[in-house]
Length: 168
Image (cartoon, rainbow, N blue to C red):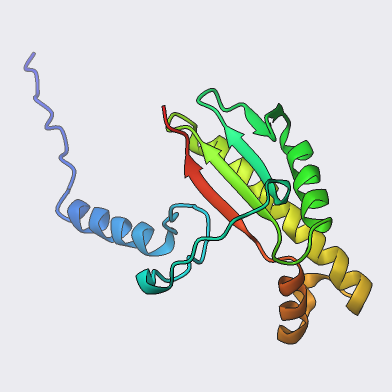
């Protein structure tokens, strides 16, 4: 008995590279690239000639700080994010237009997530105040206000946040 050798059929792989390249291009074009998230802040322009120092009354400053362990303090008392938002809201609402400052201090070891959440709580307080004023004065929320209405509301509740880093 003679054994026959059967030939194993080979796969035709000539177009595999082309298909792989087309799939790669397809996924690159159709997928979205996530951009880094951060805090949107519009900083004032640096004008060295018109820098003025102002004396600020301590009663018009709300001290907010984050330590290296991400513990949040408001006027040297430990607070949660919700408590911080409420305290910022009542502090800003009780002050005249340009007579308040939220002084934020962080430690260099503070995590970005804790810093981001603290900033969100502060900005959330301003948003809530602006929404309340818009509803009371104009009958609709702040995001539906006209440019003129927004100017009036922002002039009443301007974001006055001073940031610094604790020295170690």
